[in-house]
Length: 111
Length: 113
Image (cartoon, rainbow over all chains, first blue to last red; front, side, top):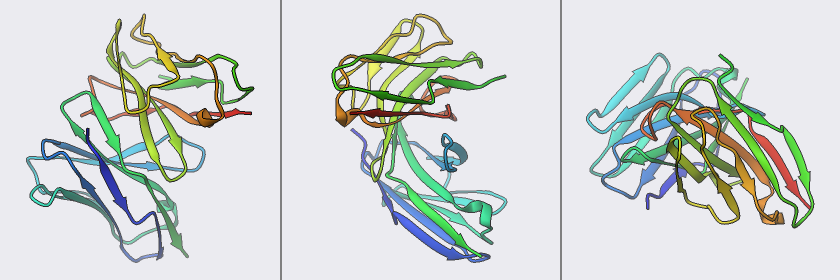
């Protein structure tokens, strides 16, 4: 089955700086790569996703890049704000049935 | 719309007891799934369903049963609770499958002593 590795497990950045979280996946047939944000005491929520026919997608301060040859994808958050502090999960899906998640990154924004 | 609801919010069980975690959605989603979240291990898929009457195993199905008699409900049954099942459980739903936005419930924190 699919295996997704996520790094780093914790990340602290100064407010206003950028944050980058990286994931690698094992199944070259995977074709859907979402990112979820989980705030304390809540369920994860989708923040951005990318499908394998594009290399980059942006939504305001958030961007995701995909390198299918190297089998890795990354989340970029620019101009970080205190409300960006949360746990972030990457995931990968092959076909339409199972979604495999990474182990999560706890992002802390330092004021 | 209430979205995805889960009950109970918290539960403490003794080893060997059984219980059912409830999950319901009001978005007419075909796909529903159960995950468990443990520190350092992310979200792991327990069971999923692509529609009423259809269920399948995920990554960590042992010790859990599911059924899907209606589109709205997807209960998770613990047959004989073990301390290794101490975790936070999330139910999620999406329009048709894993390649679409998953809507997660608020979670159930389960402790097995």
